[in-house]
Image 1 (cartoon, helix red, strand yellow):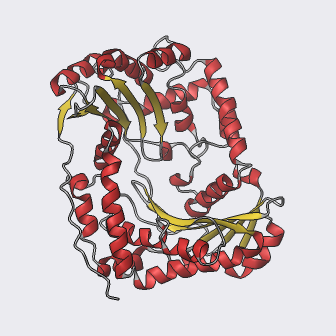
Image 2 (cartoon, rainbow, N blue to C red):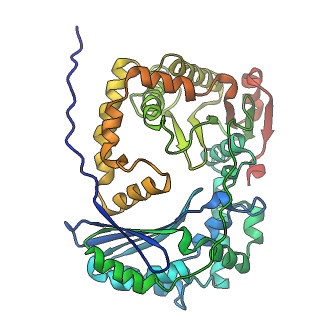
Image 3 (cartoon, rainbow, N blue to C red):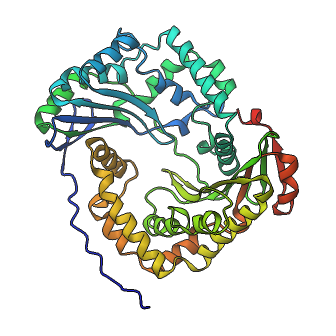
Length: 450
């Protein structure tokens, strides 16, 4: 029976129209008026992240950001929480490898009071000693849980096997040693160096009048002035540190094995990002992907299997993840490697390409439904220097990917077998004999990753 080739017609996607202003201290403000609901989303983004932590103090940036809401401008953590909760707002902060951010969502009629809180949290954190100790205990407990969880262990081990000593290989949440030694002076200094107007941008989306909200921001943040130093560029990265090697994290009590494969990838904004995303989705980006079909549907080796490209500012990585019974470890690894090689050799089929394009193009508008999602999308365009029409033309670019283009970028960027690093978490005694011919085997304990 001949397959129909219906043409997919996309409704035009109107990009959020933003107006751009500059505060007296140099902070750039981007405003999108979107008044269907009386809500406002504001994102303060700093163009520096955890990858710029000192190698000897991993987790410094993340730990600093965790404490922003735990006391600021003389207000206690409870007072800040009460002021936010009372008006039905939310205020949070996060750190990633490339950026740090403080995000506010609030009813528009409470914007003034919440802006004052955001300004205090971002520019005047107190880092009370008692809160530092509380955050330390909580973070160490989180780390302890991660070191007991096979999936978390696999991710930590893969990060180190791929990135090695590169700054992207630093543990964002830190290590037991770094967390135990961090004190208030280090947090104060990290905040002073990190939160400077020269590295800051503001994104405001929602029920606002642009000129009026900029005046409010000037009143709240205009006096924030601080010198800044030159940001050191991150080094280049081209090949996984343990490419062609095997790392086994020994957990003898486990009857299942967490399986990871990793390699170098591409940085965010690479010219091949969209067609490679299309090819990767066909390979392992959804329930209908090849990896799911071969590993779960056909053989029942696992409930889930997939792969993705992590795209960061200076570099990127490829990662496959799944899990299986100890005795079927090698079978799953061989299937995963074969499917990666098959996509690299020939790219997606015409049917796979059409399915993936419909899926990605149809899903994209749902990622722009909220004020916060829009502010994040616009911030990504600026942070990673994406084309100015990235948002409105994303679906068109996806639909324009030809099978030849998808095959070419798959051949270029999917890893060769000898470029893959293999990470397994489980009973090393039972696993090692199955994979000893795949490269030099290193066995580590969970505590080695903390």
